[in-house]
Image (cartoon, rainbow, N blue to C red; front, side, top):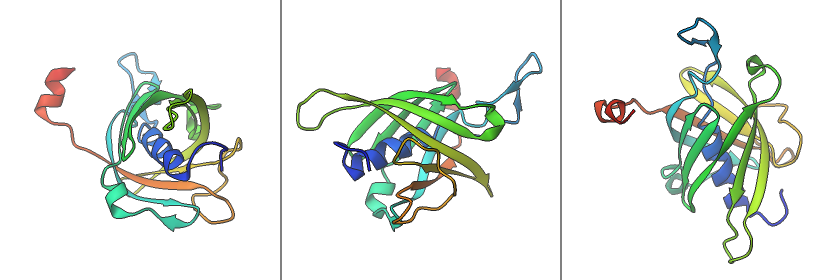
Length: 166
């Protein structure tokens, strides 16, 4: 677990960050692959596990992630988090590095944080696993021994109002 960052805050940031992920099969107008196409949009958390334990339903219900071209905004019980995402290696590896600033809840200096994660799609659900250390996760499981955060997201259908804002 990261020093100085509570398990809850770490979970909140991780959950929001992974909502940015999506399928990398999209095409741009020029015909080139756009790895952000399926990750772009709003994502609602359906379930989350940290250190092998399920997060409370009231926490999961408030978690949401919005991603677009390497940027994310996440909603958690502790507030909003913003940051950047970058593919590590080829986008087809489905590994991301997340950079964000975590506010100090006790009034101290905010801390810049970097997290590693990987993702996959499983029956329409975006599955993201976050590592609590500098290494990338090696499996899509959260256990007491690996200390990963595992989050399942479902894409929120865009509305006509959302389309007009763009």
